Image (spheres, rainbow, N blue to C red):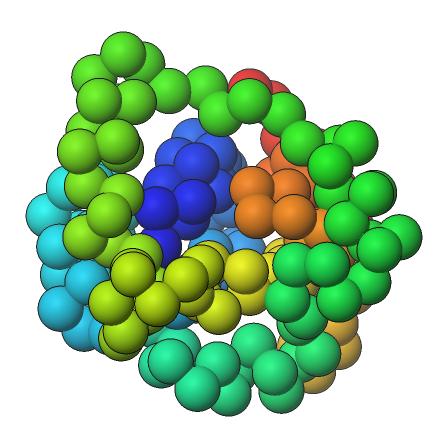
Length: 161
């Protein structure tokens, strides 16, 4: 859940332009449960609670779209590592992230059991127009995601930062 903060904050600045152009979203799907989601939302009040939901610890939604785990595809991992950028967080946001990351780990097992599958599970980004997927991006490593402006350009929205 904690990596989602970066994605959500990146998308938030585009929401007014998206609404003006008639584009719905964004909708975020993360791993976890309702307790962790509520804690995440308490820590991130700028995120609309109606725009986010969680896939359980069986990862059924992630598996249904073919998302993999870290290192399942070596080429995807290399691509993702090369395209990663450091998140633009303030000192307070970094402190809050570090303070809460342990309690938001997407796992229903103790951390002593090793690196949870929820930490290794990769996500992605889709743009959907009607019934068609017009953009699809599969993360190569946790934190690898496209710039929202690139996704919105596919939908015909030339956004300004």
